[in-house]
Image 1 (cartoon, helix red, strand yellow):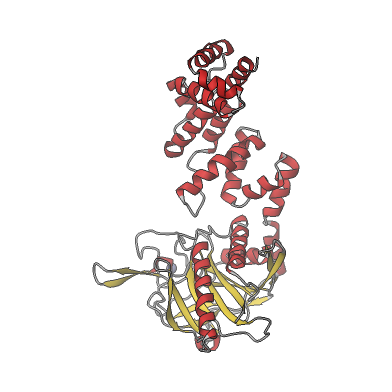
Image 2 (cartoon, rainbow, N blue to C red):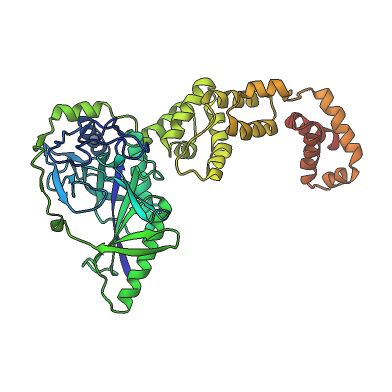
Length: 477
Ligand SMILES: [Zn+2]
């Protein structure tokens, strides 16, 4: 039987405030276990929470960026459940009155058509601590450093119908959150992670099927796998006339399977109720206006800026703006070396390839913008050859050593002397008559062969363009 797939996502994103959401402990990834803690965030009796205004502002900012309505009054509630990394046995969250409601983002579906994914809400809550399972001691340790870190939960409507759409939606959200600088969005460190709700229904049916929830996915790949696995599992059950039970699952990437963690409770099972320690709070319009003023350019505006003012192509600008870290790096590089198109080309061809090779989920360029600008400037002005430029690029990627100094010390300057290159070219032509014959027979590879030989003999220092022109001049005669 054929089924429609119905997918909704709950995306959790840690906010990068200086302190935690209800106390003044440091909000920082890592650190010695249990050193960023106080009576409030480990839930000692009598400790009282105080909301972090910066976290509220960042939540509003996220809401404004995706077109949500900002509620006038918001309420913090207790979501009751026991879990070892949640010392209070409840999480402070929001249910009936979140800070933001509605809104949405646009993605492209499989046919390249625009599709609008509606948001239900964005609410502010606290993160839990972290359990570290240690087989050596045969037990589990708890680190409460993460407990109380501000977290926004962005809840979508069930508007997606494939793994590709879910990933496109997640990528879009990540991009927006990164641009408005409310979160690091480091998926590997867990500052962006998501739960996927998925159900199947007979094709065309309007009745929703029973859903399963896959928890804590922290890479695009794990989202794709989890959805594909779940589609197979649920369609097999439905084909065989069996029942799909509502449940929460943990995914095991390593063996590509999912395990039932618990039978899923509904909202009422958490027994939400207003936190008596925290009064409902009014969000003044003036605060919303204040936040609006801090809204930076989002990706679409940045693309327009690059196309209209720097002369980049639509495609290049779109690849470049995919990651805010790259945008910042690029902007810095062109402040030292103002040839945007040249810099962009090198980034898109050589630099991004390198990033992919390193398989980093979070884009980091280890070469300082100034050093990189110097390298490209030497290449563009013909002081060093393309071959040397690539070699140096690989090297300073590891060391970030001053590339100008390296060129000076090792005598890597390109040889642009036409007379000298001509002597070498003529020698090669005499030495390899077979390649001359190949060239004359129309085999273009012969030209590359000569250039290759020349580079070998000059350690990459000969100007390839001059050499190529000379070879053609001589052989085409
Ligand atoms: Zn604390």
